[in-house]
Image (cartoon, rainbow, N blue to C red; front, side, top):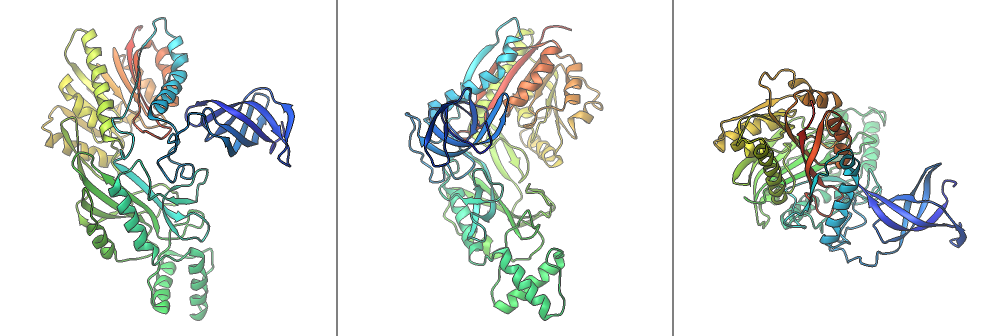
Length: 523
């Protein structure tokens, strides 16, 4: 099969996270006529759903591998529903809005069980599968959104929203997004409208910069502008035009000002934190924007408006200094009866209501492990990759002492504050890399909870965890393929899966949480 061959077929299933498996393949000629030649095997086409009839163009072809890029959905799945979101299919965030909630749950459960099937087969005893637990709400559930500034087409109007599906650079304004509530949409619109009136494409600024430099007999090489040059020329342009202008940051050119808008809102308290993230290449008075935000008619309340500087070259949000323009630098959320102060970049589950389902499950698994051991409490419980200490504090009643380890210092400081306000006095939090900290902790655990980032556990850290030889572990995974990999090592070391389930922590998206209770069976 040659590359760029046009093919058609029917999607028979979707593997995690985004691999549509297409069967009944036929070739299509360049003039769009369907050729009679049928093809053996299947093809992987991303961004497709079971039941769809699709057309794609081959991008990879090998002996046992065929991949194509989606060109067109020829026929929707017979049971497809109309998406409630006007951005569905354009925005790269949500994938399952043309499915019912029941279909989404069934698909995710099937994906997780398929990934864990080999692990289940490696054991003599079949694990208990507790199914998939659904989020109490499917829409307007997020307590955090990180919007990007950019444009949808080159030098087009300013956009603020999510990356366009299949693009690293194009940004779609998502004023109608359905996984955020109306307060997010109002804040997004307010910030976009504020900057849109003064937005100038970077290419226009470069022309102006060159003219200004020529007039001043101070020619600056186009591709070697320093930050000071950009800032000074910015204000020269303002003087010449009589108008303040603003640009967004271009990752390829390493120039521009506006980068991201981070909005966090507590589901239970309604408190809102807004953080504008920019480079230092321009200077702007943000007080008028503050006034515009505070004048919005919101269901919740803005308790803080922040300005974070980020001159890093990557597209990731990096905190290189944050100023408080208004209010405070944190908001408060409630979870299972406890209160948590959350700072802009601290990890906290993005779906508060479903997080209660998730952590209830973790707590139940821990208690079950205790019960089977004939005791009510662990002596020392490790909560590794603990974030702001939510699991640690929720587990405090079932342990004499909980030790939480987290690499982000800001999150650890928040965990200490949260524990104090919740009157939890048996939790200790340590800032550092799990791989290194495990060598330094003198108190050894008899129970471990693992809640690593998406890439899973570093192999060397996993080996150290296994060497503790605890009878029970609970592994909470936000990426089942990483869990699948780590289970190979854990089972080889004598652990077996006792119970497992999925939790639909991120409705409408491809992501899903998995919780596994592991029991030590051999030395």
